Length: 212
Image (tube, rainbow, N blue to C red; front, top):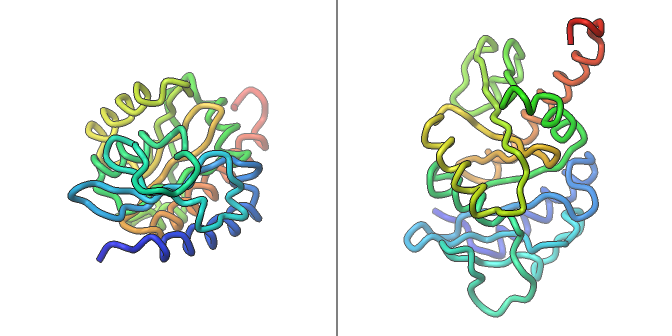
């Protein structure tokens, strides 16, 4: 059963406080969404320019498949609404979470020329849905950040169709997007990716300069 908006708003608030404390959504960064309806597609999504550490019910909007707000709630949806819609459509996900941590931002710049980051050999990989072994190789694509979000969403949608194995992606200089069947699974994926990215970044920093 899909969640109702009061439940989603409470969960957004809990997740937002947790992620803010961890330094993953400082300032007004990050955005969260959850599917309310499949046919027609409707999402609950955090409004633009609000602190995710202090989300109120009024900060949660309802949008349709075209990204247009539904109902009389104030505020405007996140500028990245179309990325959430792309993931919901292609992956059939129930929730999408975007964080803006130091490590996701830093590594998205460091690995941008490679088009993505390879994560392998970590036990924590088994926290990603469907992964059963630490020998799994997870490819995390990196997209150049852009102000033309609808165009960026087209590129993201194409990648999601071509790579059904990925669990998340990075925007260069911007942060992580990941998703799940529901908010609990999406939250777990954020925790796994943030751990893996930080571990990878710290390991890279400890390597001799010539091997980085």
